[in-house]
Image 1 (cartoon, each protein chain N blue to C red):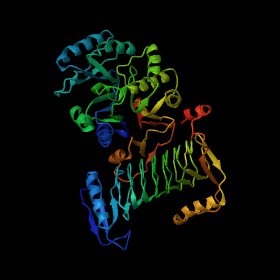
Image 2: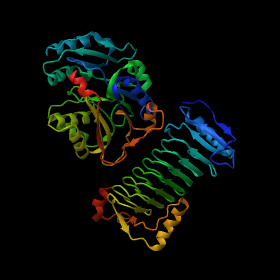
Image 3: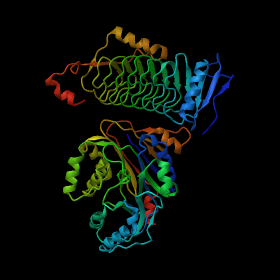
Image 4: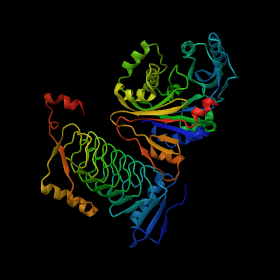
Length: 316
Length: 247
């Protein structure tokens, strides 16, 4: 049992705050770790990198090595990295880098450091923050409730298939596709079959979490020419298991549900402002009054919500 | 959002023959709300619950003769383990409405989420809107009446009792049914494994009408489909292996 959430605002606003509320209301669904994917104001050039280091004492050396490897692809820091000042052994760091010459190869290169420093998201606007603990705890440690943006995802994890570690929680970045993130409630039963196929195509996975696989699977299908809608529909037939997942990009959030209708998804749509969650009581944190609830309870459902104003922002 | 404890009012509008207790939910701990509800029920008051915010476990384990109305939407397991209370929900109910109830009467004005009436053994659940997937899953007895459409895989492994849908049913209807019955007026998406449509006798229709009569829902023009088990899954036969694999 996990809890997932999505939020879309009509214009850039307090999306971090809303995601924390949605996840705090679902903390009982999985209190071992919580994560957020926030789409903030997009950089015109360069990428925001969110990463986690596993030994705080090595922080300086980790960042130096990360920079050295990035420079091999012509990428440099655009601003001074910042990190959390907590007492935990692991640390999380936010960096901005100029565009690497080859993003896929850069990802493979910096992933050689992943036993020390693991890149958790990369995008013009995407930032993934995750850690052990409940929504409030993670938010207070990493300032999620202050984060501004247009949309985002949240996840509360009850580990069933792999370890409880700060980097094993959701959301997952669709490595190496920039600005793609996923949250997932359920289990994939043909995980190793798909992982093997995708690895032979050259993709790399940093965890044994089945949700990381869905993110890459959907992105790979889209790279092969499918629209997001087609990829979501295909996933219901192609991937075996029970799932409700949401996948976010800069212009939209899509969802898909398995053919057995096992995992719920509850949505409110108020003038194109979307709140989506596993449980209705979570969306009521955002919409306090009685509202029209859309229950995506049936089997084999997909949907896509576009981000209001995304086209205008691109043109601007 | 309220921290107001239960208040007792003499101006009862729901049950004019008795005292009414008003209980606010908001973000109060659900145990406190529950204690207030139980105390009011023990005192024999009619109960109105406000600001429910779709929260879970409201009105679980209510005693016989309790009369309670939830003014808004409720979350998971509302009316679960009911032992004879009359429960009204003004809007929608979440997962597991009336789960394992042994008797009593639950009315939902709106939609009831997944697994309404799961494993119930007796009593009545009346859903005025649609019902979600696996309505009446594993039910042992009692009646579920759905005025709208019955969700996917409803009646799954139901052992007894009747599910009566007046607005059609979704896919995999009455999947792997045991001794329960699913009655559908209107379209059916498709039938589940080992579900068989039978022509009801006049006596059987009269039995269903007797269930619908107190709810004012009798309509002699209905074209009923009565769905029961084909009994292929009652005993394992190797020739039926494919049917088993479809469950």
